[in-house]
Amino acid sequence: MAIELPADLLQSLQGIRGFNQPAFEQVHASGGQITSIRVNPARQSATAGEWQPGGFDPAALTPVPWSRYGFYLPERPSFTFDPLFHAGTYYVQEASSMFLEQALLQTTDTSKKLRVLDLCAAPGGKSTHLQSLLSPDSLLVSNEVIRTRAAILEENLVKWGAANVIVTNNDPQDFARIPGFFDVLVIDAPCSGSGLFRREPEAIREWSPQAVQLCCQRQQRILAESFTALADEGLLIYSTCSYSVEEDEDILDWLMDTFQLETVPLQTEPDWGIVPVQSALHQAAGYRFFPDKIKGEGFFLACFRKKEGDRYASRSPKKAPLVKAGKAEAAVVQPWLRQAGDWQFWKQQELILAFPTNLEQELLTIADKFYIRSAGITLGKIAGKDLVPEHALALSGLLAPEIVAVSLKKAEALQYLRKEPLELAATTKGWALVQYAGFSLGWVKLLPNRVNNYYPSAWRILKSGNN
Ligand code: SAM
Image (cartoon, rainbow, N blue to C red):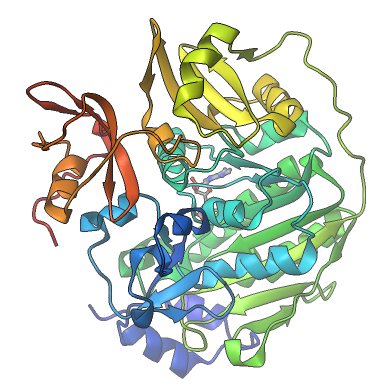
């Protein structure tokens, strides 16, 4: 499909540092597609011996220069039919976005306990990345305002398998309830999306100068409503996938006019092809990604250090918003979990969840003020003296090594992921993990004459074929 870029967009980009119209148009016309993945470092230990990032042949991968976990693939495989994709060994993510890693690591001591809010988080690219970069005793609150998108965010975070994450479904303005709570605030703002035109040419039809105006008003609103939640000296990371100055440099100037904050420049290597820019009024530092200069799509990112306000003064909620599981319930779940690890068990309706003990205060604060979709690892439901395990438990790093696991071949793994009946020659009975290439896919129940498939219905593969 020939891509015709909006004349108004091209006109508006004249004079922007790094904008080279012929090269920009040519790269869009070429229709070239770039595929990149980011591996889940928490999953790599499952492979015995050789390290295979995300299960891929290392010889086929080219590193993304600005991310230790990012790799380009030589071509786009069918991710749907790769069981390891469903096992959360990697996330398919556009390479430019992975620059978030530089923004965080160059500005923040990530060995410390941090509270991080990813405000516009669905489908979860930045959240899964942040989780891999933070220390295990840090908290990531991953928020998405649109309910259906929050469900996808939750799914991707369950696949990622980390315990130190809370998924919320709140409006940005709700975060004013906890002033100064977060050390890092990531706002990957909804935008006019011009940076993705090469990948999604259909989006061109929705682009207009009016849409850019509406987006920049919305960006200001989102920033104004949530900025309170950032602590003094906290880091704001703002990004868009738009080329428009109104949504990028102009927003930086608006921030500097509106709040007390300092621009935070980042180091980039010249051969990365990233273009450092400055806002017109306050010379705030930003970073532009043009697809004719880098191997990735259009992207913009800037960092600020907040210079106002206080830190949140923690106080226990008057009425506990979550209840701890009792001794009897803990005794039911304990045999499923590995010994090492400092968890507390909490009840969320009839479900039991595990959450890091050192984050109790944070969990109670968030549960008191926000709508939580999931917190930590949902272990399952207690039924009498037994646990009915949840899918999240299968994909977590919490499981005891003694849990029975059945290894599947690729065709069987796809049958499982379609939630089709399975025939397994297993000698034991009861709950078992099913695995592919050493990575867990979910639960089955082995019965005397059949196997019950417990893959979540809503996530099953619907597409036919197998490649
Ligand atoms: N950070 C995500 C990632 O890396 O996968 C992508 C985020 S996307 C660029 C912007 C998100 O903002 C979308 O999920 C969208 O639903 C959400 N959004 C839309 N309107 C919003 C609003 N008014 N306030 C906050 N978020 C909004």
